[in-house]
View 1 (cartoon, rainbow, N blue to C red):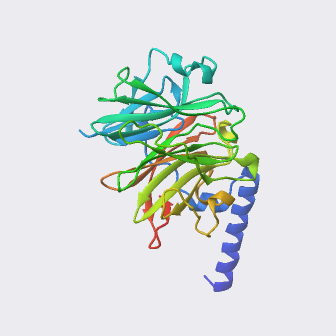
View 2 (view 1 turned 90 degrees about the vertical axis):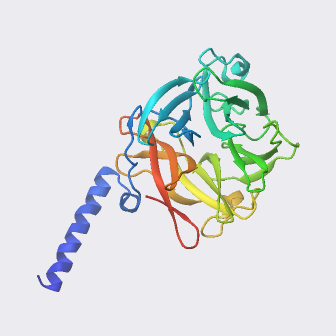
View 3 (view 1 turned 180 degrees about the vertical axis):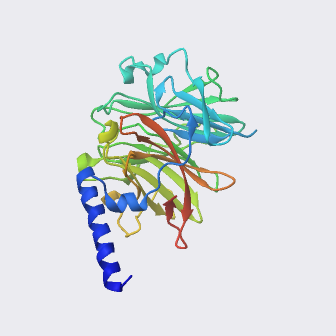
Length: 327
């Protein structure tokens, strides 16, 4: 094959791919760069998932749902329904949910011999919201005890108390990040003995000024001297039309300032994209990172072309300069 013919052939293939991309609305760079979710079987429906490794082996997953949806897995691949954290309702949250049993975006972890779960109560488009804390020694459905409200926002707060994430620093400090739209992502210090606020200070850690100021779902992960702030940009909850995507920034201090790979501050809209819609994977977002024995694991949800929310799991690799890539 001559060099000229090879170039013509490659040009033709590229042209066909480009036409196909235009016809089917594919993002060529995304389709080439981003992997599909790893193999997940069994009960795979999930929205705003979070996962913890159980002390005795296996995994416990919690997700948005009536009374908080629970799932278990022995191998991080096959998941089984495990009921609801609160099967008998959550009357204490009704003033924020309008009486709905649907609770949002749980954050599950294991500390001091028990499972802890921060979760949010709100209604769509409202900033009258609250974050609560619950605990369980087994993590099983119906065994969770609510410990009360941690923080709330009102219609005039200018920020939104949803999407909580607990981070425990190497020195043992507890911090809760949270937020959605409005003035962005916030952080408060917690008392490790109670899991409640240690003081009245609210730190600003990220804000956007485009696409309806859409930034939410913070998750902070410590690795190699940096705190990595994973976030969701753009719009969730629109099925296959969702534009949710996962971005990251980092800081040497948990309260920031956080900067993306280009050096842009997250308080100025910064965030380096690491996963976005591609092919039949729509709106991958609401990230959580689990440090497992074999790898760092990214847990998230995405939508199928039929509009169903599904559990997404991939591994993370890290560059020599300390930035994550999804694979």
